[in-house]
Image (cartoon, rainbow, N blue to C red; front, side, top):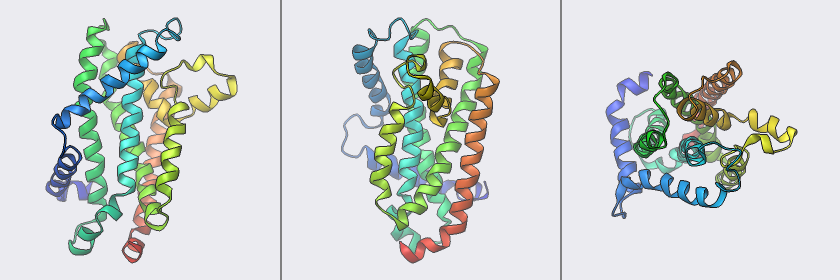
Length: 254
C-alpha cells in the first residue's frame, strides 16, 4: 500500500504505456476489450447452448461471467510473470521499487476487465435479470480474484527470472485450468471426483460467486465465502512474501 500511494503516478503512466502498446496497431483499440468476450460468448453459445440448454439457465451469461473471471485471473498472472524481465532496463536505471512494475501490470489487467463490464452489465439486464441486492457483492468478488491472481503473479515473476521455460508450462496450465473451471458446462454432469476438484478450484470459486450474485440473484454459500477469501488472502500473502524475499536476487540474474 505504501508503494501504491507513493508511486501512484508511475503506476498510472506504466499502465497507460501498456494499454497503448497492446492496441498500438489496432483500429478499434481498447474497444476490443468489450468486443472480444462478446464474440467468444457468441461462438460458445452457438456451439454448446443446445447441448446444455436444459442443464444451464441463461447459458450466454453463464459462460460470459465465467470467461470474464477466468480471463481476469489469466491476464494478471500472465502479465505479472514477465514484468521484471520485460522492464530490466528501467529496473537498472531508475530507483523505483520492483513492486511498482508488478502493480502496474495488475492495474492494466483490471482496467481491461472493467472495460469488459461495459458489455456484461447491459447483457445481464437485457437478458431479463432483475436488479438484486446480491449484485452489491460483485465488487468483492473482483477484489478477491485480483488478490489471488496477483499472489500467483508474484511467485511466477520470481520463477520466470530464474527459469524462463515456466512461461510455456504456465500456458499449458492455463488451458488445463480453463477446462477444470466449468467454464461452459455444468459441474453436475461430471464424475464426483472431478466435481470435488472443480469445487476446490480457486478460479471456479470466483466464477461461481459472480454467477450467483449477478445472474441467479442468490447469496454465495458460507462454504463459497470461506474458499474465496482463503484462496485470495493465502495466495496474496504467500506470493508477496516470496517476492520480497527474493527480489534482491533478481538484479543479479536479470
